[in-house]
Image (cartoon, rainbow, N blue to C red; front, side, top):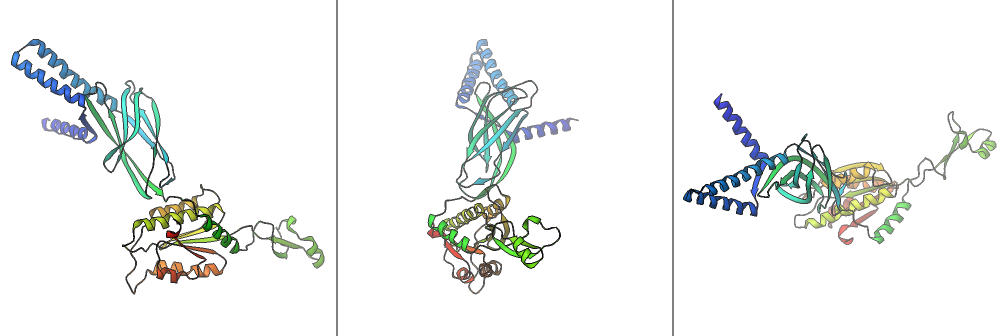
Length: 381
């Protein structure tokens, strides 16, 4: 029985030191030095008053540990993060802190985020959290780079009751984030050029609209309001008028990812950001947008607002894409180049095809001869 008790005590201490930490404040350091001095004086002199003073100071230290632990027990924290985060664009994160103790309140709480093993102060301080109560506090965040980010957890600190120690509780509250590329404004000259290309290469297709697409014989189930009466009277049979859908346009955006190692990462990041801005621009204009990122293909989708899922699928692909070194001389990245070679056929069928160039690549330029437009990212800064 004795060894089992020792094992449980050892596990309790391991749990405590894993999820708790204790640090002296400057005031606490001075208090401990004073306690040590009074203890030495009491031993040397045998003065009962000094022994009483030493006992009182030691009891304050013990009470500080017990009461601070009580403040950190049974705290529940929930983090609320916006669904869409963009690089270099501020966002607001909310922390909801609940005290699940039935009777005792918590005091002087300070909440910090744990990122890559470091505590980041978000300026969240709670002076008093009653038993069974909850409080929400928000703070701004700004991510300077796209891609995956991770918040490992939170650290809750308290100096209660005497400010001698800072006791911390480490809670696992993992948040995996995907930050989309920065959406920078497109140059006005590029917007004008793209507008002309877009309308010149609009696709004619049957659908709801005003313009005449076709005349055909009436079939059972057709809407009587679509009957073209003049033609029906002339041909002595019912003729139905089919309309052409309005402004049905398609665009393919391509971003080659092969970048030499001697190029700075900023040139590729500029191209990624420009591609994201183009995707958002055409999406708002009602285009059916397709995205090629290296060998990855995001199929067509259409929408009109920033809340459309297809737009965020494209931004997600751009957020996680990475540059790769070019293929050795005499070889080629067949998968990526084959996708680029199909752009000429799509352009011939009336589709708008745009290739964003991160650097001057003759192999890519040769594969994209039939594309509607090659946009050098370095010229749009």
